Length: 236
Image (cartoon, rainbow, N blue to C red; front, side):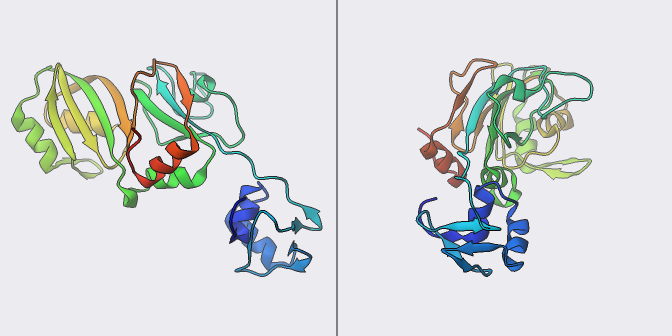
C-alpha cells in the first residue's frame, strides 16, 4: 500500500468497492482503522489494520497494463454480440482489464489495456491532452500541403471542429497527431480534405511508441513506464 492514502482509495484498491461506495461504507461506520471506527477524511498506510465489518482487507490487487499491437479485424470491447474477435482475446485475462480508448475494427496499432482506472482517466480525459500519433495511407496517396495546412488549422466535422496538432506528408499518405480521440476522427478529418484512409496504424500514445511490436503481440509495461505514461513523460 506504501505511504498513507485516503481510506476510500485504500478500500477501492483492495477491490471492496468504488471510491464513492467506499465513502458510504465509511460514513456508515462499517470501517475501522487499528480498532477505531473510521470517519471520512481518515488515511491509512500499509502498516495499519484496516477492516470492513470486522474482516481484514485483502491485499490490493496488482495492476497490470499491456501495450498491444492491435491487428485489423479485432473490436475494442470486452465482448461482441456479433461474435467478432475482441482485443481481450490477445492478452492474458485479468480482473478489471479493459481497453484504454478505442481503435475501430479496421484500424491497427498501439492499444493500451489496463486494470488501473486512474490511468484510463488520465489518458482519455480531454483535459490531460495526451497526444496520439497515427500513420495513415490514403486514396489518393499524395496529400497536398494545402490539405495538411487545413488539418492543422482545423476542419469542421459533424460533431464539431477538429484540429491536428501535427499533420505531415508521408509516403502514400500522412502522419497525423491529435490530442483527442473521437470516433473515427482521423478517417473523418482526412475525408474532410478529400482523402479516404485505406490503412491506419496508431504509432504512439503520449510518450509510448509502438516500436517493433508485431501485429497481435503484446508486452506488459513496467511500473516506471506506467508512471511516465500517466504523467505524459517520455518512455525512452
